[in-house]
Image (cartoon, rainbow, N blue to C red):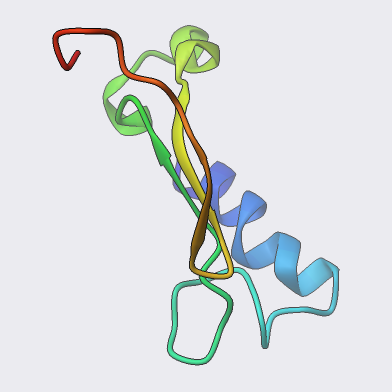
Length: 73
C-alpha cells in the first residue's frame, strides 16, 4: 500500500516534473487532496475498488463533496 500511494502522489509528481508544486502536502505546494470513505490499509486488496471519494480539494478549494445519505452515514 505504501508503494501504491507513493506512486500515485510523490512519484507521479516527479515523473511530471512537478515535484516542487505537487505530490506531497508541504508549505508552498498546491493543496490538492482527496478524502476517502475507508482506510486502504485496513481493507483487503480485492476490496480497494469499493473505496469512494468523499471530498476533493484542488488548490485548497473544495471542488467535490459526495452527498451523505440521510442519517449522517
